[in-house]
Each structure stands twice: as structure tokens, then as C-alpha cells.
Picture 1 (cartoon, helix red, strand yellow):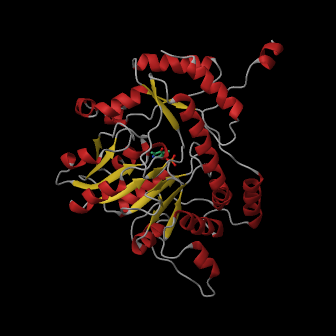
Picture 2 (picture 1 turned 120 degrees about the vertical axis):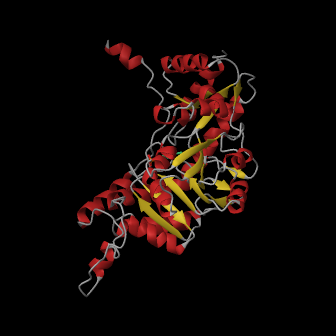
Picture 3 (picture 1 turned 135 degrees about the vertical axis):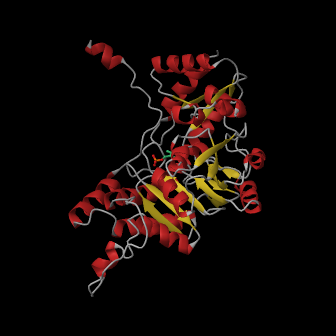
Length: 386
Ligand SMILES: *Cc1c(COP(=O)(O)O)cnc(C)c1O
């Protein structure tokens, strides 16, 4: 038994966070300081994050899901309103709309970038439409200029679900300096920088930033830091209904260390992605990612498409890869196929979303993946012709 185990190749995971002693040190300092929730480290993380993406304001929150909820709420979206978004996304995109009583209206995607197709949006706008929620899927920016043009012409908000897109850029500008109104990031361990759980909102609008910053802690008029530092008794007020979406200082300390590593991480991920593309792009039965010249992908996920076969063939290939010790994931989900969003209307209206969701396989890619392990994945895929 033991020899079998020792001979077995370690499973190659699809993703793995990259954490080091700097993160450990940061958390330890916070624990020893006695200030554990939103405080000085959160403020520092916000300043550094804003500087990194080139935006004026950054507001740390508990996740990207709560970032999206807060952004939609602060944009005045509520019951009866419609928000246009892609179905090819993690379900959080639609849940953030739905939980405010508004309705997600799904737009199909561009078949080469897998992002929301600006061409179909105008046909989906109704008198109830209030916003476009664009997703930079897997870390590849959506066509923001075209989306913002539509948003302005129709008096809609443009909010970016940039959960996957830290470090990606669009026409030379880092994602996070919003082309529209607001961008929302995730620090879930599946993303390329993590705080365990966590999120960040960025905006160039100072009033909106100040309001969202209050709303994340029940609209309290004074922050805890301001109260703590005040030499006079400071009495806060609560001028509207708010939330508890705070990030802790432990998480922020991890985030600061992760941000310091991000440039190195991006270089490594882009190198590994290029190795995959070089090795696989000649195959007639498989399509590698297509990157428009104006975008820089962060390769949070490296997804290939099977251009022949059915969804069963795709699943069988994932199973064979798993048996060879290679963990993969199915493509980005199609939200309209999950119970809360199912309808025959969507199934007919979203052919490209359905196709990508049925044919995509996400291959392993993470910072500490060795070239040797990657070559093993490549060789195994090359043997898999369906
Ligand atoms: C991961 C993800 C989210 C949710 O992020 P959390 O921080 O886990 O709430 C939202 N949208 C997209 C596109 C994502 O990939």
C-alpha cells in the first residue's frame, strides 16, 4: 500500500494561493496590536490598492459579492429595476442584483473574448434598465469603451465586476480606474491575490466613495479610527440604513503583502500562459485564449475550448485528466442554467454562452507551478485528442 502511495504523482491542483512569511508577519503584528477589525491596516491597504490601480478612492469590504451589492445599492438600484449583465459568470454577479430586488437581464458574450457583447446590449434596454454590470471574465477586460458609450447614451450606470481582474489592463490603463462609475474586486483564494475572503471597490467619484465608505459600517458618520484619535468626545450618527461589510485588519495585512508580490505574480502567470499557448495553439480540436491587442490578461484562469464533441466529451476529458493526476475545472458557469435563474427564454437567447460553458476546460495555472509540471499537463493534453 505505502509503496503505491509513494510512487503516485502528486495531484496538480488547478489553482493555489501564493502566501509567504510577509503575510504571516503582517497578521501577527495586527494580532499583537490589539486592533483587529477595520482600522489602520485597512486604511493602508486602501491607499496602496488605489495607488496600484491608479484610482483616487478604494474602499475595502468583506468580499466582491458585498462590493457588488454595495455598489448597486449606492447607485440607487432596487426593486423593479433591471441590470444588464452576462450569464457566463460566477453566480455572485447575478445574486448581487437579485438580492436587492432588481432583475438581472442576461446578455450573450463575444465568442472570442467570452465577455459581454456590446452589440447585443441595446436590444435588451427597457425603461426599467438602470445599469450595465460588466465582468472581466477570468482576468480579460471587457470592451469598456463601447460599454461606456452605450451607458452614457442611455443614462445607465456602468459597474465593473472586476473580481478576477486585478493587474489586468485595458488600452494601457490598469483595471480599477473605472471607465464607468465603479469597479469591484475579489480577494477570494481562487483569485490571483487573496486575503482569505475580501473585496475592494474603486471609484473616481469622491461623494460616492465617502458614502460607500460609511455604508459598509451601518452609515456611521465617524470611522472608529477617527473616534479613537479624537481628543474630544466624538458622537457619531447613523443617517441612513447601512450594512456590516467591513474587512478586518488581519485580512488587510495579508492584502498589503499580496499587493507587494503582485507584479512578480503577474510576470510568472503571463509566462506560464504563454507556454501553454505556444504548446497548444496548433491543435485543430482545441482553442487557446484570444487576447485583443488593446488588453493585457492577468491569466487568473487559463481556459481552453474543445472545438469538437459534446459536453459529455468535455466532461470525459476532464475525468481522464483527473485520472492522470491533473485537476481541471469546467468552464465558467452559465448563470441562467441554475435554478433561481432558469427560463427557456435565456436558453434560446444565449447560444454563445451555452457553447462556451459546455466546451471550456480550465487548466492548472498558479504562481508556484513548475515548468516540469506544466510540461506534464501539456503532454497529457496533447495525447487526449477526442
Ligand atoms: C469570484 C467572483 C465573484 C465573487 O467574489 P467573492 O469575493 O467570492 O464574493 C464575483 N464575480 C466574479 C466574476 C467572480 O469570479
